[in-house]
Image (cartoon, rainbow, N blue to C red):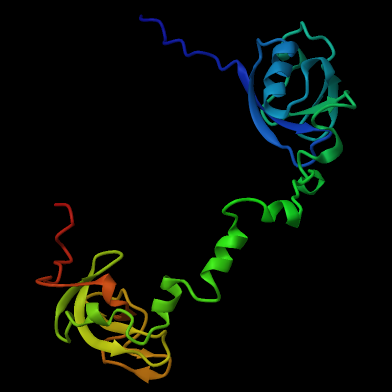
Length: 242
């Protein structure tokens, strides 16, 4: 009889790690049971910044009971019988450690760079000088969106009854309205009746009836989102697998 297939034994454990100085530090780390304690500390140093020589490790079980101190760097980690879900608590013994003082977690403790108004004014091309050159006027984008004729030129190529496709999503439908829209932002709008219930209303928007369509088939979109052309209704079964 053929021998049974021998499966490899998992010699690692997943351990929850916390830190004495870093209150928000919490990590799940997998350790080999064959690695010695020094190798475990080296792996933790790369994650939290505490030096191996300044690191003391405490092992806790899943009931929060302390099991042991990992004082012997030469012993394999498996000697302490850790299991998945146990916790290693790092104690940083160095008072000058990068983890001390809380500044790694609290950015308000980090000294901010400041520049005096006099020094800032001496800088060439600073934002303050740029803003003064522009003066108290709106940007082109802001001005156009408040213009009553915003997108009028695009809307002139769209007429009621046109089949269309609307972005995003390539939603197909028919044009039901073109023009300005009371209650909406300035400029021109296009009312769409989608072929499917992909809209938000039935043509009634903020108390104004712009067109009629079935519930949840209507939408008001900007003209630049609409492409008119020969866009037939999609076959609802064309994407089904046979």
